[in-house]
Amino acid sequence: MTRCACFMGAGTMLILMGLGCNKSGTQPETLHLTSYQSPCHGESAMSAVLAVDSPFVRRIPSPSFQSPCLENGVHNETTAVSWLETVRFVAGHDTLYVFHDSVWCNCCSKIRFDVEILDSVIDFVEVDTSTAFCRCVCHFDLGSCFAGLARGIYTARLWMQKRDSLLGEAEVFVPGASAIWYESRCDTLLIHHDGKVANCCAQYGFGVRQVGDLLVVSEADTSSMPCDCFCVLDLTARIAGLVGDQYTVYLRDGESNSLLDTSVVQIAPCKGE
Image 1 (tube, rainbow, N blue to C red):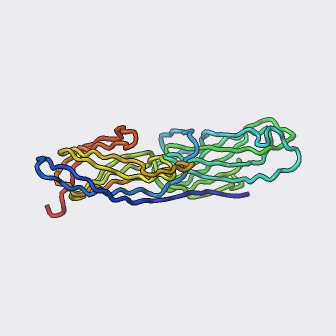
Image 2 (image 1 turned 120 degrees about the vertical axis):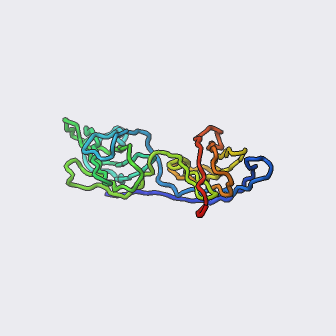
Image 3 (image 1 turned 180 degrees about the vertical axis):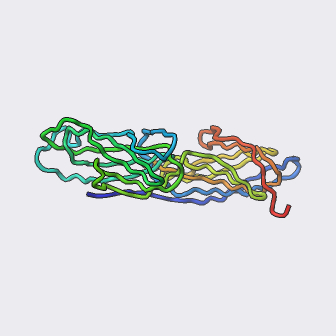
């Protein structure tokens, strides 16, 4: 049996410059813009989501997926053919996914996943709910997910029905639901966009335009070659050189020009002021 949990990461740092006018409109104000993109937090593969009120729950059913027989409907009555059985854990937004591929079991099996959570340990349990037993065996791909998790590192485990056999285990970072938030330091404003689902090869940069006390900030993927996968990224724009004490910020998607967020932010005074 093979246990597998794979993640890929890539970061980038882009330095850009933006020019604008101060509130009086008489003298230019030079803004220094730095863009940061975190490594990929994990590939996103499934869309089924279960929302919960709290991550601290005990033994509840979770959304379950079971493929048809992988031998094109031909049930094998004797020995297993050469299929690689694997267990994978993947995180996306506030959701943890488990995949159990090429499982060799009775062809009448109907697998349900239950989930148990205690603190930061998440246990998926495979339960065969079928009442019939057929005289054949077959390979299946199985999957499940659990949503509503807070941002953090979790220990994910997959168990057989009686919890007498551990099928797979991995530590997984869950980025949490997508969030946009702000912080200020002296003449500097930081804009955070956490949990953005994007192409694995995306290289995000920011642009800024100032009109009085309005900052129009855009984020866009500058890469030209997309990959055949998606992952979760945390993005940060650092705008230095601000002279005002309060700004209205518009954060826009630079590709669709849609408004992602708007907020009035207070710039914290420099130490000693």
